[in-house]
Structures are given as C-alpha cells and as structure tokens.
Length: 194
Image (cartoon, rainbow, N blue to C red; front, side, top):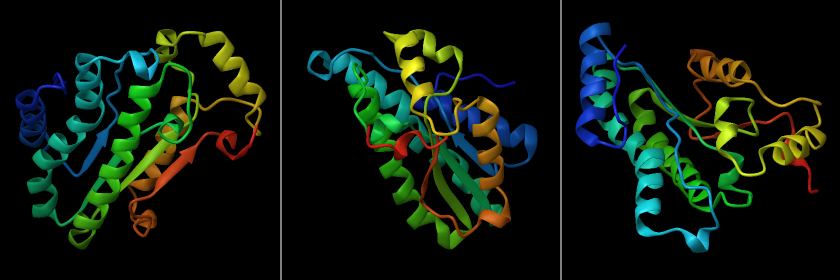
C-alpha cells in the first residue's frame, strides 16, 4: 500500500510513480479524496477555501497529470472522479465543498475532451447520500439521513458497493462511449422537485 497526502503535489506525484513501479502502469485513476470545512459559505476563510479546493479538485489534476504518461504509453486509460449532488444542489453548511465538487465536474469534462482522442476516457460519479463514516462529520447527520431516505424513490440510500459497481462498469470497454458525463448514483433522489 502506498500512502500520500493528496494535497501535497510532490506526494501525489510520488504516489503515482510508486504505483507505476509496483504495477507496471496506471491505467485507471480514481479521484475520490474528499475534505472540507462544513459551515456557511459566508463564513469560509481563505484557509478553508484553499484546503477544500486543493484536496478535492486540484489533487485530481495533479494525479491525472502524473498518470498520463503511463496511460498514453498503453493507449488506454480511465479517469473517474467522485463528486456530489452538492455540486448542483444547495445543502446547509456545504458551500465550499459543493463548489469544489462542481470544479471537479468541470475539470472532468475538460479532461474528457482533451484525452478521449488517446482512448483515455474521463467521467464523474455523483453519489447521493452514501452510508459511510464520512457522514459522522456532517452537522444534523440524522436529520439529513432521514430526509434522504424519505425522498429516495428506490427506498434506500446508496452503499459504497453501489458506487463501486458503477465505477467498475465505467472502466470497461462496454462503457467507452460514455465520455465526460456525470453519472448520478442516488436511487432517484435528485429527480424529485421537493
């Protein structure tokens, strides 16, 4: 296992280099680091903004740049980014995280257009509320979970396995014509107007 602080460019590049040395290449890059300061957007200071955008969005660009030589050499690659419904919908105290997730979606579209000619395909997965330990950091966690459960048409929240299965499928050649898209994996939650 290789560990790195994804907010530090030199560590991110070392992570990719060590992976190439250990595995021979990096064919699939998944940008799923998430961090942020949960408070009203009007209370976000420069440090909180820089921290959140750096960890969530910039780390993806650095990682992709480091992985590109390996993908180009093979003539095949997949880039998956994990965003959030909060990139398009407003949640209390999620402002800077939502902005960083929207930046990831835009970055993924630009990567998709630039890299598709090299058979390197980029897409986003946008989960709804997923049952993980990350929920412990949210204010009003129980209220948020209960609301999401009531408003998810399939009657349950997504699991990490649900997200992983979509990610694995997007990395297959069957999905090669899905390029630069944000795939919502939320059980229909984002479809409802209220």
